[in-house]
Image 1: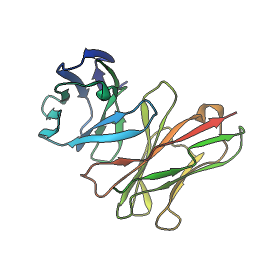
Image 2: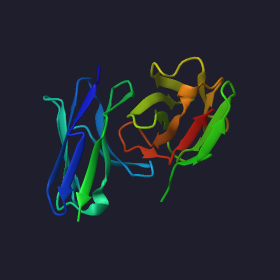
Image 3: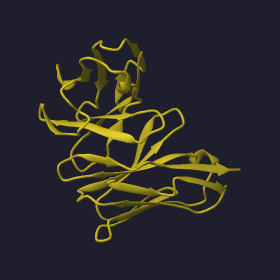
Image 4: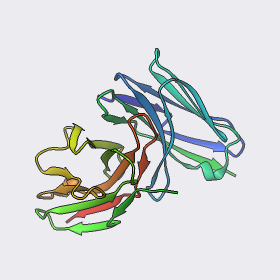
Length: 108
Length: 113
């Protein structure tokens, strides 16, 4: 049973394309994280959301609490955006549930 | 910029041996976490720690695992008797408070042989 489902699993885009990665969760959450994992394995937190929308540069994250769904958008994608993007739901008990990740490759 | 530091970056150990993975969280952070990622699989939550005690743990975090904050700066994960299936990348993370971003360390790759 997966508490967090991400789609797509793999995504290849041309440089400049608009990208959307989706995340659905089944647990009650206090927050949802979007993380970026680089090829070397290091993890960076991109966003933490509990409602609405956040924007940082070319990255936008949205969450719909009623629908238990979040999206990560990348505008004007660039090869350096190539990474694995992971959605993680945090329960009110402070337990994390991770999605399987979306492997993004942006081709020049 | 403050960062979470993990040592060692790679550890190889014999099956049955005890290992201690070390993490130095960001200094004014209060919430601490350990996760693991088996090669090719998703990241899995192990344990969260606040106010000198475990606040949540997953099914993976059985009696073989323990965490400690021995001196107010380090946050350690001990595996008492390692098994082959404990081979994974172990990540530590910390947060200033419950509702802020988590900062992750670079991970310790544990290989049990």
